[in-house]
Each structure stands twice: as structure tokens, then as C-alpha cells.
Image 1 (cartoon, rainbow, N blue to C red):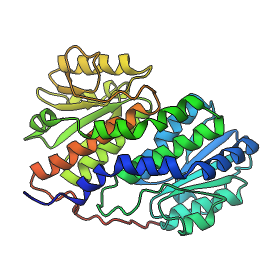
Image 2 (cartoon, helix red, strand yellow):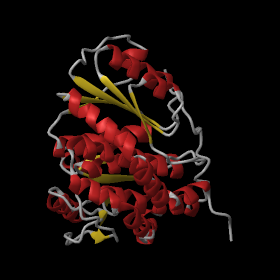
Image 3 (cartoon, one colour):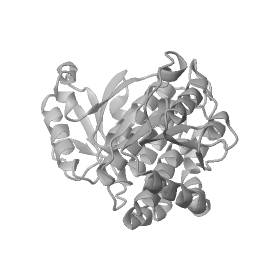
Length: 342
């Protein structure tokens, strides 16, 4: 039997990494939550790229849905290339980077602080340049991640953001849901999505649908298809897909609908079923679909943690699908572990 890939091993480490974060981050996150309450920002800004930006998008939905504070993504080039100065005196800025080394992310964090923002770094490298540039540093505690494709660092970045949100807003229900998450992620890791592998054979393109926090997961899934499998995947809101992209859907066109247990479930499931009627081969993580094929999923009992279980199931699938295509998921073409942009 072939040795497991680094990616496969690291997917298996996700539940323990989340457990460690929950156990060891309480003091730092409690203090960060108090500082945010004292700042009382009217705006949150996020700074990130790649998978970290998908984690930031997840955090955006979580904050807007539960705290009622608008969240905006800042393009790092605003500082690093264009040298623009932003007025952020009533804002907090959260920069997410596993390595904390990319110069444009560090420059934007510094610029946000100079503009008056409270700056917070979520990073896997506590002594990094990003950490040194930020007012508050939250170590995501994922440990070493050797695979180029981020998996456990993505999940722990999202969990760290949700923990920060729970402490900031004093949300006991969210904290309880996070405490229960490691066991649920272990179950999610074992969900069998082999039927999706079979449907994708012979295809080089697909759509991935989501809405709310699950849209952030759809974007992360689309990136992983490109990174590990050399398959062109595009993520869309289930509302947006009907405004143009649906025109390329033909018979057998593969679509994955990532659906959580939240207010959007009925809407996304309805779109998934409609796309089956247009000839697509649609797979969905919901028991409410009638035409689409249901994939196994783990329901976490909280709308803000449900999509994290979906991404862990997806990661197990995509690692296996890369190997099915004869590819090494640890060594994607033209990529390296740390990308430093300016």
C-alpha cells in the first residue's frame, strides 16, 4: 500500500489541531475579545490571500450574521503597490496568513494600523513579520503543515476567527458549538464522496455552489480543485449562477452544491434541483434536495460551524480524487508552500 500523502495526514490531524486550539487559546482570545469590545468598531476589515482569504470570507459572513458589523476585504496592493492611506480610526483590521511573511499582507496590516485600526493577526507563525506588525496576535496552533495545499491551517484559521467572534460578542451558543466541533470533524473526515469522483471522471470543469458561510467553502473547494487536480472549478452563489453562468450547463455537466443547515438551505437546494432539470449532474449536501444526488454530511447543530464539517469531508474527497487522476496532491504544478507577493 502506498504511503499516505502529507495532505492526507494533515487532513487526519484537523480534529486534534482544533482540539488543541480550543484548549490552549482561551486566555489570548478572551483578552482579544475584551479589546474588541472596548474598541467597539463600526467596521471590520480583512487582509488575506488564497485559502486565508476564503477563511476571511467565512469570518465576514459570521460577523455580519451574528454581530451586525459590516466587514470589508482590503486589497493588499492598496498599500504595497499604490501606497494609498485609508481612514480606519473606527475600524478593526484582521490579517490572516499561515506564514505571516508575505510582504503585501504585512504592508497592509501596517497601513491599517497607521490609519487608526486595531490590528489583529491570525497566523501559524507567532514570531512572523505580520505578528510583529499587529496589535494582537492569535496563534492558530495548527503545527507544521508540509502539503502545499492548506487544509488544517484553513480550518484552524476559521475556528480561531469564530472563537474570537464568540469572545467578542460573548456568544455562549457559538462557543459551545465550537467545543463540540473536533468529534464532529472526525466523523466528517470519514464521509464517503466516492460517487462524486465517478461523476467527475472525464470532466475538466465544474461549478461549486454555496451561500452565506458555505460560499466561502465553495471558493476554497474551487481553489483545491485547481491546486491539486488541475481541474477548472468555479464557485458561485446559488443565486448568481442563474444570472449568466447557467448558460454553459449542458447534459452531464458536474455541479457540487455545498449546503449547510441554515436559512439558505432551502434556496440552495431548490437551485440544485433546478439545475438537474437543465441536464446537470448535481451533488448536494442536504437532505432537502429532490432531484440532486445527496452526499453524506455531518450536521453540527449550529449554522456557523456546519460549513466547516463540509470542508473537511471535501478535503478527504479532493485528496483521493487527485490520486485517482494520477497526481501527487503534495506537489501541485508551479506552486510552493509559501507565496510572497508585493
